[in-house]
Image (cartoon, rainbow, N blue to C red; front, side, top):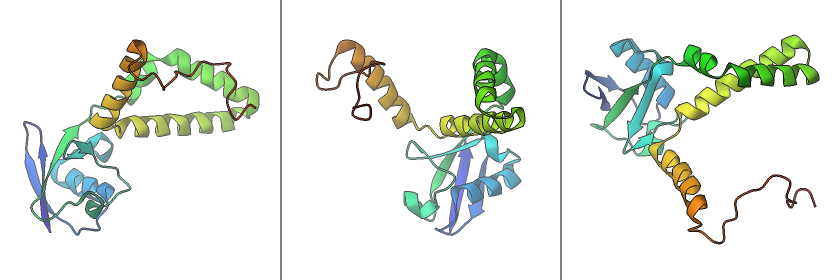
Length: 157
């Protein structure tokens, strides 16, 4: 099947894929045609960010579908500069429990996982997070109690 991928206010490409093609494979094909690194691509269909591990058929993408491509800036260096205290503190904590080389490996894996999770947040996810935090301030959901550290939870009982 033939699908198109369009950059907002930019170029568009058509790629030949099957319904069982993974989103990651689609990104690789787009990278070849549009020269945009896979790690800087966010594919969106019907307002939902497509997960790399899913396939086109998981999202009911059919022949002729148009996917939207958002190009992310390379923020890995900026993220480290903007919050060095957090990573330094995490490094020190990890070194208390692991050897320095193992602590570095764990920290690097943590950075990768965090970046991946942030990259895959959909607009719906962001809206739910914002609504939850805004609602907790106005108490619109009386049955939902905000978590307070130190309270007994079922796991602690």
